Length: 321
Image 1: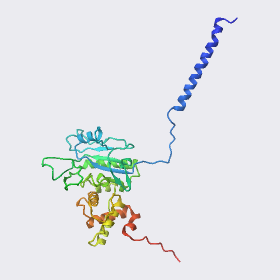
Image 2 (image 1 turned 135 degrees about the horizontal axis):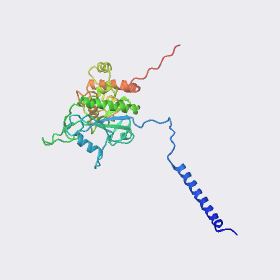
Image 3 (image 1 turned 60 degrees about the vertical axis):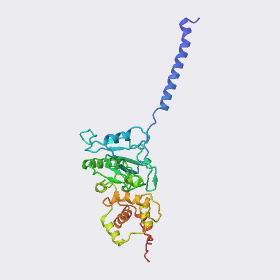
Image 4 (image 1 turned 90 degrees about the vertical axis):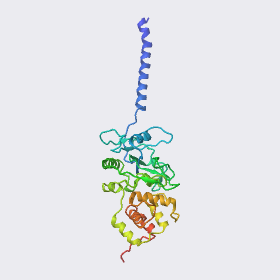
Protein backbone atom coordinates (compact mmCIF):
# COMPACT_ATOMS: atom_id res chain seq x y z
CA UNK A 1 0.00 0.00 0.00
CA UNK A 2 1.26 3.56 -0.94
CA UNK A 3 1.93 6.01 1.82
CA UNK A 4 0.15 9.39 1.99
CA UNK A 5 3.30 11.12 0.74
CA UNK A 6 3.56 8.77 -2.20
CA UNK A 7 -0.10 9.25 -3.06
CA UNK A 8 0.33 13.08 -3.17
CA UNK A 9 3.46 13.01 -5.33
CA UNK A 10 1.63 12.21 -8.56
CA UNK A 11 -0.61 15.33 -8.55
CA UNK A 12 2.37 17.42 -7.57
CA UNK A 13 4.36 16.08 -10.47
CA UNK A 14 1.49 16.88 -12.84
CA UNK A 15 1.24 20.41 -11.46
CA UNK A 16 4.93 21.02 -11.90
CA UNK A 17 4.82 19.70 -15.46
CA UNK A 18 1.94 21.99 -16.36
CA UNK A 19 3.64 24.97 -14.75
CA UNK A 20 6.76 24.29 -16.76
CA UNK A 21 4.77 24.02 -19.97
CA UNK A 22 3.09 27.38 -19.31
CA UNK A 23 6.46 29.01 -18.66
CA UNK A 24 7.88 27.64 -21.91
CA UNK A 25 4.85 28.90 -23.87
CA UNK A 26 5.13 32.35 -22.29
CA UNK A 27 8.82 32.57 -23.15
CA UNK A 28 8.14 31.50 -26.73
CA UNK A 29 5.45 34.16 -27.09
CA UNK A 30 7.83 36.86 -25.88
CA UNK A 31 10.49 35.67 -28.29
CA UNK A 32 8.19 35.87 -31.32
CA UNK A 33 6.22 39.07 -30.60
CA UNK A 34 8.97 41.36 -29.31
CA UNK A 35 10.71 44.25 -31.11
CA UNK A 36 11.60 43.42 -34.75
CA UNK A 37 15.23 42.83 -35.52
CA UNK A 38 16.63 45.72 -37.57
CA UNK A 39 18.57 44.87 -40.70
CA UNK A 40 19.20 48.06 -42.66
CA UNK A 41 18.56 48.08 -46.41
CA UNK A 42 20.62 50.14 -48.81
CA UNK A 43 17.53 50.80 -50.93
CA UNK A 44 15.93 53.95 -49.51
CA UNK A 45 16.35 57.72 -49.42
CA UNK A 46 14.85 60.81 -47.80
CA UNK A 47 11.31 61.87 -48.66
CA UNK A 48 12.49 65.50 -48.49
CA UNK A 49 13.03 67.18 -51.87
CA UNK A 50 12.22 70.83 -51.16
CA UNK A 51 13.23 73.44 -48.59
CA UNK A 52 10.76 76.29 -48.08
CA UNK A 53 11.74 79.61 -46.47
CA UNK A 54 9.07 81.72 -44.75
CA UNK A 55 8.92 84.86 -42.66
CA UNK A 56 6.50 85.14 -39.78
CA UNK A 57 5.34 88.80 -40.00
CA UNK A 58 4.95 88.72 -36.22
CA UNK A 59 7.23 88.73 -33.18
CA UNK A 60 8.79 85.67 -31.61
CA UNK A 61 6.20 85.18 -28.88
CA UNK A 62 3.25 85.39 -31.28
CA UNK A 63 5.02 83.23 -33.85
CA UNK A 64 5.74 80.49 -31.34
CA UNK A 65 2.12 80.51 -30.21
CA UNK A 66 0.77 80.37 -33.78
CA UNK A 67 3.14 77.60 -34.83
CA UNK A 68 2.74 75.32 -31.82
CA UNK A 69 -0.72 75.70 -30.28
CA UNK A 70 -4.03 74.27 -31.55
CA UNK A 71 -6.28 76.64 -33.48
CA UNK A 72 -9.08 76.68 -36.03
CA UNK A 73 -6.44 77.08 -38.78
CA UNK A 74 -3.41 75.18 -37.46
CA UNK A 75 0.00 75.84 -39.00
CA UNK A 76 3.51 74.78 -38.10
CA UNK A 77 7.06 74.64 -39.38
CA UNK A 78 10.02 72.41 -38.73
CA UNK A 79 12.18 75.30 -37.47
CA UNK A 80 11.74 78.82 -36.11
CA UNK A 81 14.62 81.30 -36.28
CA UNK A 82 14.18 84.23 -33.84
CA UNK A 83 15.09 87.85 -34.51
CA UNK A 84 17.84 89.20 -32.21
CA UNK A 85 16.26 92.61 -31.50
CA UNK A 86 12.79 91.22 -30.78
CA UNK A 87 11.69 92.34 -27.30
CA UNK A 88 9.57 89.21 -26.89
CA UNK A 89 12.63 86.98 -27.32
CA UNK A 90 14.18 86.62 -23.86
CA UNK A 91 17.18 84.39 -24.48
CA UNK A 92 20.66 85.89 -24.22
CA UNK A 93 21.90 84.16 -27.38
CA UNK A 94 20.12 83.51 -30.66
CA UNK A 95 18.75 79.98 -30.46
CA UNK A 96 17.03 78.10 -33.29
CA UNK A 97 13.91 76.19 -32.24
CA UNK A 98 12.91 72.88 -33.79
CA UNK A 99 9.13 72.54 -33.66
CA UNK A 100 8.55 69.42 -35.78
CA UNK A 101 10.93 66.48 -36.45
CA UNK A 102 12.28 66.56 -40.00
CA UNK A 103 10.79 63.17 -40.79
CA UNK A 104 7.30 64.45 -39.88
CA UNK A 105 4.98 66.66 -41.96
CA UNK A 106 4.82 70.25 -40.80
CA UNK A 107 1.76 72.19 -41.95
CA UNK A 108 3.63 75.04 -43.60
CA UNK A 109 3.29 74.96 -47.39
CA UNK A 110 -0.49 75.03 -47.72
CA UNK A 111 -1.91 74.98 -51.23
CA UNK A 112 1.29 74.94 -53.22
CA UNK A 113 3.11 73.80 -56.34
CA UNK A 114 6.70 73.51 -57.45
CA UNK A 115 8.35 71.71 -60.34
CA UNK A 116 5.33 69.58 -61.16
CA UNK A 117 4.69 68.60 -57.53
CA UNK A 118 1.74 69.49 -55.31
CA UNK A 119 0.98 68.76 -51.64
CA UNK A 120 4.45 70.04 -50.79
CA UNK A 121 4.04 69.40 -47.07
CA UNK A 122 4.74 65.76 -47.96
CA UNK A 123 8.05 66.63 -49.63
CA UNK A 124 9.45 69.64 -47.82
CA UNK A 125 11.08 71.06 -44.74
CA UNK A 126 9.83 74.50 -43.72
CA UNK A 127 11.78 77.21 -41.90
CA UNK A 128 10.02 80.22 -40.39
CA UNK A 129 12.16 83.30 -39.79
CA UNK A 130 10.94 85.99 -37.42
CA UNK A 131 10.73 89.15 -39.55
CA UNK A 132 7.95 91.65 -38.95
CA UNK A 133 7.13 92.58 -42.53
CA UNK A 134 3.60 93.78 -43.15
CA UNK A 135 1.29 95.24 -45.79
CA UNK A 136 -1.51 97.79 -45.68
CA UNK A 137 -4.49 97.78 -48.01
CA UNK A 138 -5.70 101.13 -49.27
CA UNK A 139 -9.16 100.67 -47.76
CA UNK A 140 -7.82 99.99 -44.26
CA UNK A 141 -7.78 102.65 -41.56
CA UNK A 142 -4.47 104.50 -41.14
CA UNK A 143 -3.80 103.19 -37.64
CA UNK A 144 -4.25 99.52 -38.45
CA UNK A 145 -1.36 97.07 -38.61
CA UNK A 146 -2.83 94.09 -40.48
CA UNK A 147 -1.34 90.79 -41.38
CA UNK A 148 0.65 90.77 -44.61
CA UNK A 149 -1.10 87.81 -46.22
CA UNK A 150 -2.56 89.82 -49.06
CA UNK A 151 -4.11 88.19 -52.11
CA UNK A 152 -4.10 91.28 -54.30
CA UNK A 153 -7.71 90.65 -55.33
CA UNK A 154 -8.70 94.25 -54.49
CA UNK A 155 -6.14 97.07 -54.64
CA UNK A 156 -2.38 96.64 -54.61
CA UNK A 157 -1.15 96.82 -50.99
CA UNK A 158 1.64 98.99 -49.63
CA UNK A 159 4.23 96.68 -48.04
CA UNK A 160 7.14 97.22 -45.68
CA UNK A 161 10.01 94.74 -45.45
CA UNK A 162 12.59 95.10 -42.65
CA UNK A 163 16.14 93.90 -43.23
CA UNK A 164 17.15 90.50 -41.90
CA UNK A 165 19.73 90.64 -39.11
CA UNK A 166 23.27 89.48 -39.89
CA UNK A 167 23.57 86.99 -37.04
CA UNK A 168 20.07 85.71 -37.80
CA UNK A 169 21.20 84.88 -41.35
CA UNK A 170 24.41 83.30 -40.03
CA UNK A 171 22.38 80.94 -37.85
CA UNK A 172 20.01 80.23 -40.74
CA UNK A 173 22.88 79.31 -43.05
CA UNK A 174 24.32 76.94 -40.43
CA UNK A 175 20.88 75.33 -40.07
CA UNK A 176 20.42 74.88 -43.81
CA UNK A 177 23.89 73.42 -44.26
CA UNK A 178 22.98 70.72 -41.75
CA UNK A 179 19.64 70.06 -43.45
CA UNK A 180 21.32 69.65 -46.84
CA UNK A 181 23.77 67.12 -45.40
CA UNK A 182 20.89 65.09 -43.99
CA UNK A 183 18.77 65.46 -47.15
CA UNK A 184 21.18 65.61 -50.11
CA UNK A 185 18.39 65.28 -52.67
CA UNK A 186 17.33 68.89 -52.08
CA UNK A 187 18.68 70.50 -55.24
CA UNK A 188 19.55 74.23 -55.56
CA UNK A 189 16.38 74.93 -57.57
CA UNK A 190 14.29 73.34 -54.83
CA UNK A 191 15.37 75.82 -52.16
CA UNK A 192 12.51 78.27 -52.50
CA UNK A 193 10.45 80.92 -50.79
CA UNK A 194 6.81 80.53 -49.83
CA UNK A 195 6.02 83.09 -52.54
CA UNK A 196 7.63 80.84 -55.17
CA UNK A 197 5.33 77.92 -54.40
CA UNK A 198 2.18 80.01 -53.78
CA UNK A 199 2.61 83.23 -55.80
CA UNK A 200 -1.10 84.01 -55.87
CA UNK A 201 -1.33 84.41 -52.09
CA UNK A 202 2.10 84.67 -50.42
CA UNK A 203 4.96 87.19 -50.46
CA UNK A 204 7.40 85.73 -47.93
CA UNK A 205 10.28 85.79 -47.30
CA UNK A 206 10.10 89.06 -49.27
CA UNK A 207 12.54 91.05 -51.42
CA UNK A 208 14.97 91.73 -48.56
CA UNK A 209 15.78 88.08 -48.03
CA UNK A 210 19.44 87.58 -49.08
CA UNK A 211 19.16 84.75 -51.61
CA UNK A 212 22.45 85.71 -53.27
CA UNK A 213 24.28 85.56 -49.94
CA UNK A 214 22.98 82.03 -49.40
CA UNK A 215 24.10 81.06 -52.91
CA UNK A 216 27.59 82.33 -52.12
CA UNK A 217 27.63 79.84 -49.23
CA UNK A 218 26.59 77.00 -51.54
CA UNK A 219 22.86 77.18 -50.81
CA UNK A 220 20.21 77.55 -53.49
CA UNK A 221 20.21 78.79 -57.07
CA UNK A 222 21.51 82.01 -58.60
CA UNK A 223 22.33 83.21 -62.09
CA UNK A 224 25.67 83.90 -63.76
CA UNK A 225 26.08 87.53 -64.80
CA UNK A 226 27.72 86.67 -68.12
CA UNK A 227 24.76 84.52 -69.18
CA UNK A 228 22.30 87.26 -68.25
CA UNK A 229 24.27 89.76 -70.33
CA UNK A 230 24.26 87.39 -73.30
CA UNK A 231 20.47 87.02 -73.25
CA UNK A 232 19.96 90.73 -72.59
CA UNK A 233 21.97 91.55 -75.70
CA UNK A 234 20.19 88.85 -77.65
CA UNK A 235 16.79 90.35 -76.80
CA UNK A 236 17.98 93.71 -78.19
CA UNK A 237 15.17 95.74 -76.66
CA UNK A 238 12.39 93.21 -77.22
CA UNK A 239 11.51 90.39 -74.84
CA UNK A 240 10.26 87.03 -76.15
CA UNK A 241 6.51 86.43 -76.67
CA UNK A 242 4.42 86.07 -73.51
CA UNK A 243 3.79 82.38 -74.22
CA UNK A 244 7.55 81.77 -74.25
CA UNK A 245 8.00 83.68 -70.99
CA UNK A 246 5.22 81.66 -69.36
CA UNK A 247 6.77 78.46 -70.65
CA UNK A 248 10.15 79.43 -69.18
CA UNK A 249 8.62 80.19 -65.78
CA UNK A 250 6.86 76.81 -65.84
CA UNK A 251 10.05 75.00 -66.84
CA UNK A 252 11.91 76.58 -63.95
CA UNK A 253 9.27 75.39 -61.47
CA UNK A 254 6.41 77.86 -61.14
CA UNK A 255 2.76 76.98 -61.60
CA UNK A 256 1.54 79.02 -64.57
CA UNK A 257 -0.82 78.57 -67.48
CA UNK A 258 0.37 79.49 -70.96
CA UNK A 259 -2.33 82.01 -71.84
CA UNK A 260 -0.20 84.28 -74.00
CA UNK A 261 -1.34 87.37 -72.06
CA UNK A 262 0.07 89.32 -69.13
CA UNK A 263 -2.78 88.31 -66.85
CA UNK A 264 -3.04 88.34 -63.06
CA UNK A 265 -1.52 84.88 -62.57
CA UNK A 266 1.47 85.85 -64.73
CA UNK A 267 2.03 89.12 -62.86
CA UNK A 268 1.92 87.23 -59.55
CA UNK A 269 4.46 84.68 -60.75
CA UNK A 270 6.78 87.34 -62.21
CA UNK A 271 6.58 89.29 -58.94
CA UNK A 272 7.52 86.16 -56.98
CA UNK A 273 10.40 85.52 -59.38
CA UNK A 274 11.60 89.12 -59.04
CA UNK A 275 11.45 88.98 -55.22
CA UNK A 276 13.75 85.97 -55.41
CA UNK A 277 16.11 86.95 -58.23
CA UNK A 278 15.60 90.68 -58.94
CA UNK A 279 14.60 92.26 -55.64
CA UNK A 280 15.52 95.78 -56.75
CA UNK A 281 12.57 95.81 -59.18
CA UNK A 282 9.47 93.92 -58.07
CA UNK A 283 6.85 95.12 -60.54
CA UNK A 284 5.27 92.02 -62.06
CA UNK A 285 6.37 93.34 -65.45
CA UNK A 286 8.44 91.15 -67.82
CA UNK A 287 11.24 93.64 -68.51
CA UNK A 288 14.40 92.64 -70.38
CA UNK A 289 16.64 92.07 -67.37
CA UNK A 290 14.05 89.98 -65.53
CA UNK A 291 13.54 87.70 -68.53
CA UNK A 292 17.30 87.54 -69.23
CA UNK A 293 17.76 86.33 -65.63
CA UNK A 294 14.97 83.79 -66.13
CA UNK A 295 16.56 82.38 -69.30
CA UNK A 296 19.99 82.30 -67.63
CA UNK A 297 18.56 80.25 -64.75
CA UNK A 298 16.80 77.81 -67.07
CA UNK A 299 20.01 77.35 -69.05
CA UNK A 300 22.01 76.73 -65.86
CA UNK A 301 19.61 74.49 -63.93
CA UNK A 302 17.20 73.09 -66.55
CA UNK A 303 19.50 72.77 -69.57
CA UNK A 304 17.55 69.92 -71.11
CA UNK A 305 14.66 72.30 -71.82
CA UNK A 306 16.53 75.03 -73.69
CA UNK A 307 15.77 73.69 -77.18
CA UNK A 308 12.09 73.46 -76.26
CA UNK A 309 12.16 76.99 -74.90
CA UNK A 310 14.01 78.59 -77.79
CA UNK A 311 12.24 76.56 -80.44
CA UNK A 312 15.46 75.32 -81.99
CA UNK A 313 16.04 71.64 -82.78
CA UNK A 314 18.93 69.84 -81.19
CA UNK A 315 21.74 69.50 -83.78
CA UNK A 316 22.31 65.99 -85.08
CA UNK A 317 25.89 64.89 -84.39
CA UNK A 318 27.88 64.48 -87.60
CA UNK A 319 29.67 61.20 -88.18
CA UNK A 320 32.97 60.86 -89.93
CA UNK A 321 32.79 59.45 -93.47
